[in-house]
Image 1 (cartoon, one colour):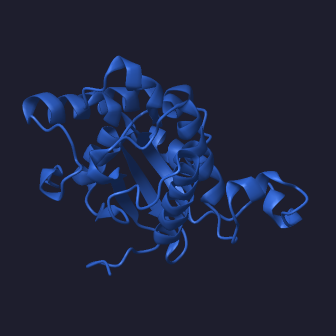
Image 2 (cartoon, helix red, strand yellow):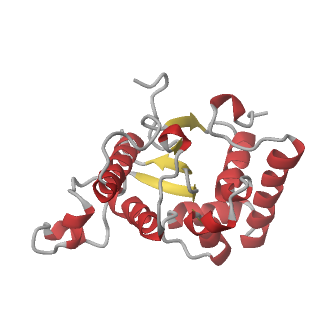
Length: 224
């Protein structure tokens, strides 16, 4: 049980990594599956596997409605070869826990079946930090949106990077909540203003403070 409950209508930094720091993608199809899982599992309706979703004969028509009720609003995200970060706003009680459970369990099931393995793929359930202060919010938003720039990711693994900066820099929200995305852009004075802010945050955390990762609790940027 979590020490602090996750509160509806509040934002949280959510992150996790592969068990033993292992890569969670072996090829581009794996990353595409994870991205598809983010889209499909963010709904209050109970669904089966993604395989079932694609089979129109076995899925209730309700699941194909354009307006599905989401569990969370995705504000920013970054998927890296061996870990991921989200900033999520919980929209319904228990929404973040339900979304993360479906996302991680569903992808693990796919990965294990594909690679003929068993056991866990991720390091525990997920880590969460309540974003309850403006300065902390600004740091985490910038850090998460361009998280891949903090890490020394080899060129041959850059194809396994997928981040929300592309959505923001093109004002084309597919995974990011349109409502939250437009709110963020307004906060920072538009596309260029937000891009500049993110670059500054990454630079501060990586160069001036020497921080390489937020995957350890004692390595999170403070709220001051």
